[in-house]
Figure 1 (tube, rainbow, N blue to C red):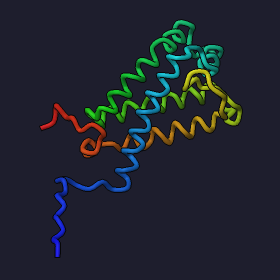
Figure 2: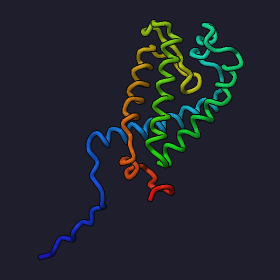
Figure 3: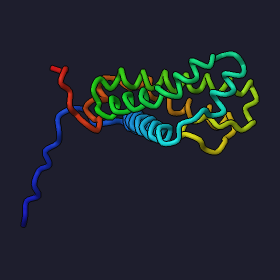
Length: 165
């Protein structure tokens, strides 16, 4: 009879279902930032969201232009940082805050009319969705990000950790 070889398990705790949820959400949020940035760079323009915020006096024209020019690059930097796994818990928190800021902007632009469609400009010029759908999407992406901790680094896509001991 053949002996079955023993499986050499990697040292460290196994991922719980909550850990897997947090990691899946983390990587999904990072990939969505990168995808959104690429679409915004391919089709630059002012979406209904920035237009509405400008019309309501929440953003002046200079701020709108600044966001249109630099937000995609910020999303690329943040998305690449997140995918690298370096200081995962910090990048997760920054992404969570960014998604909640997007949510606040959608709520402000919709004026409380959550069933009216709005083009958030998230993926360049695209079709409009009800504000409620966008709020739920962003909130569902943001909240698990705040649960990410140092223990999640060991399961990140790239396990490069130059600053750890």
